[in-house]
Length: 115
Image (cartoon, rainbow, N blue to C red):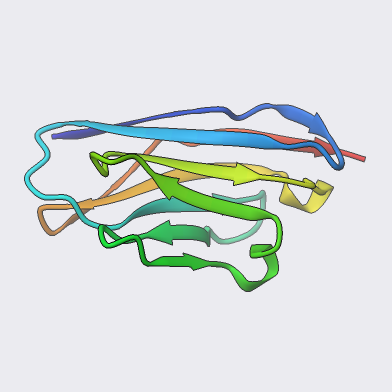
């Protein structure tokens, strides 16, 4: 079983920055894509950013100028740097990790941006 531990969620004011982290551990059979999705009340879970093992990145078009994704050298920790946060970024952010042909999800970390 693979465990994902997320950290970094917080409450900030508009214009602030946060850095989310997610570390994968446990029975990691293989290492695949890793990234972040987010979900706000009443909405679907949407892609924020994801990164392949070869460092190919995909970031939601509306977030490209403010959010950056990165991974550590071991490829088991993923980071999301979020700058110039806006109230509409308020959501639960979920870490995603593909390993051994399965998708794993973290429990989510709350990001709240106040105006």
